[in-house]
Length: 298
Image (cartoon, one colour):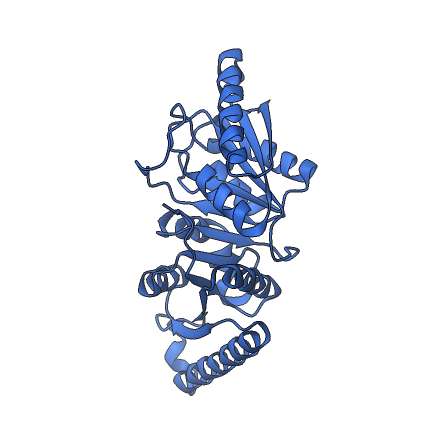
């Protein structure tokens, strides 16, 4: 049973360079999966209706309508241009409201299989794409979320799969395998011994070897490494830089498992906020149909 069955892709768009990079990544994925793309722009006005100054501004309602009409036209033109260029189906939707709620609502409406978003957008999407709103969407979305940076290029050749000594299924490995098959990529497995003990290090080494056998069983290239360190996000991002990874996979659950998590925020949030490469955040479902390798997590 496939865990990464991509047929509907949701891309929040604010017309910034990073959101357009997310669209390019979505087009690449759509072409490989014969999937459809929905572009979503959440209109953001400078002054909320709750403001005491709102009704003091002449023609504010007309001004908002004009902004929304321009956004709708611009989004439609973008969708038509990219659909024609790449021969993919792209829908354009403009809505008003709170950004997080509107993205989650659209995710449910179109039954999105993945959300692909820029992580440093400007204007209206800025609050969603940085800070707590981004993490809330990542943690609440029923599908994986791929965060994309301004320097990102479409497609992946090196997929980084970090894991640590916490209970979880091997879902992230399943996603990595299917993504590697999709893009013709290699898998790099990084075990992180946050406890920094010989016993845990040995367990993670055994676990990494088991993952390697599973990945290679799909006729894919796989390399493994186990390191000790309390700052999980730092270990992940440093290794990603060393191997020149194109994407890193993390679980989107926000449990605080180490001292660094309490100081700097959950490690998944740290990775998303500081990574210079795309991050695929996967919501854990504890799927009984996947193989549980010793109860260790990713």
